[in-house]
Structures are given as structure tokens and as C-alpha cells.
Image (cartoon, rainbow, N blue to C red; front, side, top):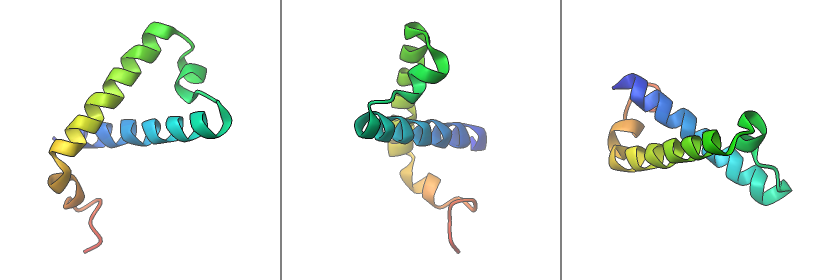
Length: 70
């Protein structure tokens, strides 16, 4: 489960960076890295699934030792 949490966070950060760059500078990071429409679509699907996973497991994700300040 820790691996799934880590992968989910990676894709959430990538998603946030992509949206920030896209809205600020009209630069699509995913398209720049992958360059293929079908690969872009797969990454966007994974980003969406990561967001759903994080929303459903929010309490577990914020109370793990890696993310907690305690």
C-alpha cells in the first residue's frame, strides 16, 4: 500500500505542475515529456485515478509517518 500511496502522490504533484505550467505559460509538461497523444491520455487517466485514490484515502495519506509533522 505504501508504494501505491507514493505513486499516487507523484502523479498528483505532476498533475499540479502540469496545470500550473499550462495555465501560466501555456506549456504542457506531459505533452513535452511524452510527445504522443495516446501516452498523454494514459497519463491523464492515471492522474485522475490518483486524485480519486487520494480523495478516498485522505486520512490515511496525511497521517503516515512520511507526511505527518509529529
